[in-house]
Length: 626
Image (cartoon, rainbow, N blue to C red; front, side, top):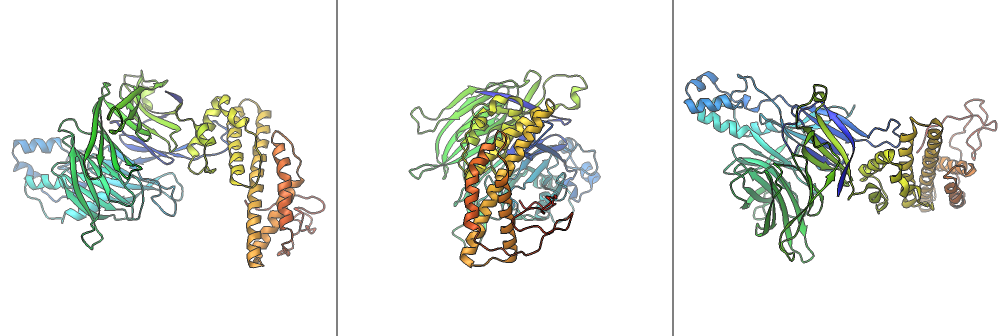
């Protein structure tokens, strides 16, 4: 197993804690000290500068101070406090944030699951938590798509729920209210199965809050009181059943809660039910991963993986909390800093000194019982100079991102951009193989694999050979369209490589690229023509706009048939021409009267219905209808 570095994003930010890089869909986020870095994949077929197609934007850490809304006389409270209470006031800046100088930084950021908005499933929200306990949810601005605006202020909603703006007279009451208002962790539901979308957060006082996401003001659905503060929350959505909350408590224990609509009452409310607590009071939990397993015999399990310092703890539990098995593994590398699932029960683990491991968790029902198999992953990352603070992977697990920060002193030039995001490929998750085995014949959910093939092919032409050797037989189905799009990928990689090397080769590749695009357009036109013909058969008449569309599309198909079959891909058009002629033969009986008499924009001569220009062949400028 090997990770190969392809490129590095260097940023002038500081990384202050591990597990601060994550990816959902086509969005990668990195939570730095003062900003959240957002990398959004914007795939383009032709990238002449050879750069990777990720666009960077930033979310600045909120300066809000939720506990500053508490009405209290700071001088009176301080003078009335004992020595221990004064120490707490001096050491915790959340007590008197309006009086003392406060140092605000990010704690963590979370990107929402896919499909948060019905009207635009590819849009995401990003929740951000500061060290002042301020929780804010941001949305990308619609017009320029470069900045992020506040979508929901969760802290403000929570403050309105618990505080009635009464004056606070004692330190004890101040401490209680500060703990109540300070949010410590957050989690989106893992998968969106129903609306409205839900999320959960925990407070320093031990409250666990379930909310509905609504614009401008989220709805607080249920509040559960725990004995101690929660530090990590994992919201596990289960289709058709109650959901689960896995909570890493301050003492190091793992609490499991099940919640959903209470069948014993008629009210449409969500109620949390405590199930069990795992693990001992020792090291605090850093991260939680969970898989829902449904076996053929109807058995349902939660497979949980927990990080504690240098330890990995794997648990198998039934939905009712019954523990089926557990196992512990000491990674012996100072501390675990990253955890990313590859496939069911398989994970990539990073440690701060730079070691990368692949682990596999065997089931408790296996012959040897529950075990964790470990294999070290080789890499060419500069771990001698950079410590690893996290790992994440793209949607298809073909692109891998490692977060690095200097582990030793450097000169001032290097420290101008100390944070490094290493973009890598994993030899066990080949992007080319993923695309060739894609049975959906659509690229909607494979843009990360496409970008990996294009970018890697730009550096190493040998990786494009499977596409070059592919023999295509075109028809009007989805598979032909998909195979042509794959050819665009390898042409795009070659264009990026040749742009600064050979102008003649680049121009020839551009011609081939446009040729493939024309083939895709004519196949799309044929499919639309058949669709319009189907409408004509069922209705016996088309409306004027449909008639005009049919006429234009048939003219476009005739123009493609008249073209010569030249170049490396000329054989494709030669094989496709009989299919195009058959389309015209099957649909030419549909009469399309001239809706508008078209004339040449240069000489005013009439243009025949079966031609695209006047008898003098003057160029006509039309809008592109595809």
